[in-house]
Length: 196
Image 1: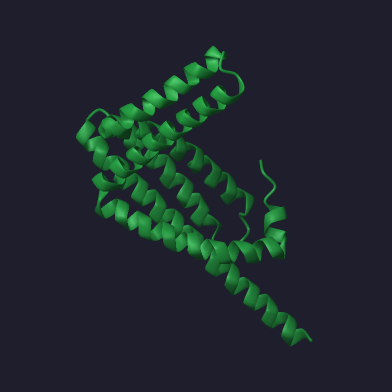
Image 2: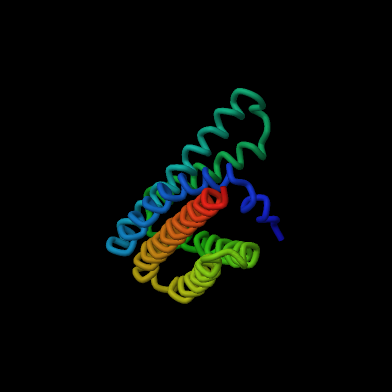
């Protein structure tokens, strides 16, 4: 298990976390609301973006091979797979959404178990249960998508909704943890002032 005490006990890291988590939390909340309100748009946008990333990666692999080792047939196979997969997803984003959905299922399970681990790592601290709840929610979302993947239309909506819910709750957790840390810091500063 990771040693979270290094994170918790470092005032410099906590200050950086408080500042960056407010910004990230607000952005995640906004994106989460968009995902819930417009799931098809978020799903298709995510799939097309992923397709273009694969296409760009394929071109970069091809360029690198051309410049360094043009006879590397395994490298050219990687170039072909990345490029063709990117083209297929860009041209047919619904298939890409289903593939992306399976990747999100893996992400939800990993995120869920990481959040549960974080929760038990910071357990005596206030609001530790939010991280636990976030982890449980991520695992439930992964299971829900696995059950909905058989129907492409349902999968299209489900990916956007799941992304939206996950981002919304991640944003809520970040903002809550940031506010809790800020309250604790100000309470500690007040105690130090009163003691001196």
